[in-house]
Length: 252
Image (cartoon, rainbow, N blue to C red; front, side, top):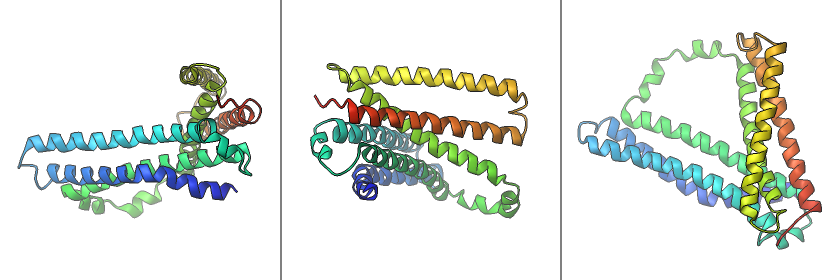
């Protein structure tokens, strides 16, 4: 059933975000042309194209956040919740589908950012510079274990951030009035709690592993601990959402 939910949930976000990605890529091509072949034509156009690129990037970020919040709030806690509650799907499956879909689209937004960078390089005439790099030598020196740990921390960090937003919204829904303000307050409270946890972990690491930041092994240890903490916090947020949705759901 989770797979069926994802088949519906992923395209629902994509219908809003994909057109923005296309516009973002178009502004990247324009910016590349302005700073490359057409650089001497008009400095004013360089500024305009840079502003358009920045506006497109901002629109993608804002729309992604808005859609992540709306899809969760409206379909599970708002107007669509009554319909979704009668489906043969558990609350945990609903939450998981929303979280996975949001995480995927955030990652795709990061990929889109990298693509726009490549397009700017291509249209500005600097793309061929990458072939001047000895990639075999570069790749042979890459610490792939560290890269994998960083990627895992990134993926689970995004997932945990999404679940934090969901937990704040769900907690805010417990208020009889001013649920939006309650959700904002809950989010701030969760952020403060996370900050204390992060400080505590950092102090323990500094005491136990005094050279944790001074070697590759130390950096790996840092990433591993960050991964464990991130997953643990994400699991807590997931269970908060699941418990409140199953036991304390307020659709008023």
